[in-house]
Image (cartoon, rainbow, N blue to C red; front, top):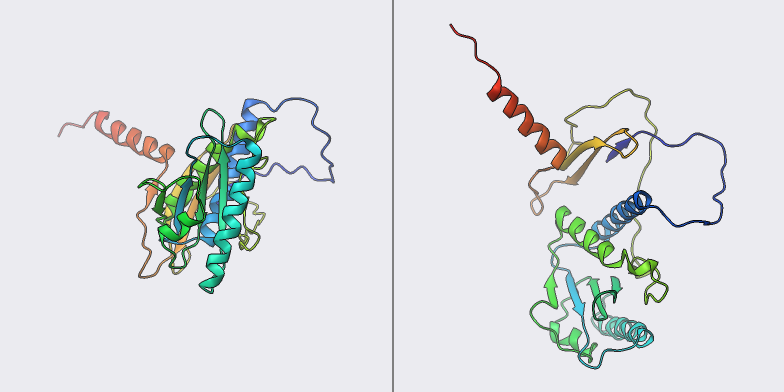
Length: 256
């Protein structure tokens, strides 16, 4: 749930062509929107104990075109193994090569497939202890992974020689998040939001946008026996709480 001041001024507007470089402020906002979008996609389609895989290359390092073909072949071969297990492969992957050797980060759903079976689809390097990990599935881990994937490709997509021209490559069978936008006419909102029945608020963040407008963000998850997540506070809230405590300590006490 995110509450913010609307930027819509009404009327139908058509975006014009790009005529100048994107400034730093807009780059940050675009990056933040990408993280939110990817977070929702991961949280909607992947769960605890799904698999995170890092695909690297032994010497010699492939060319950009070879790397592009190899990651596609890896996905095709892996999809065949999933079909033999009567399962459907879901994935999101990113490719990085700026300031590093070419490598790929992949998130896939688990179907009971083993590490050795996955490594059979990637003959260009052997998996080590860091190449194969389980996805935690918590809201915080979804956000951490989204931030990591976007960070990895932030410079890639602006490079003319980039292997990957988009921030991430998703499988076509991913379910799209159901995002509802509601216009509310109000001057302010509650500092401490109330969760819906059967839901738990796991994060609350309040602050101001770069343009000086207030916003509030909080994340709710359905409560059941398997997922009860610890409540986290944003830096803004923690700082506000620390200042309140400090003011209370510094306040002179009345003598009796």
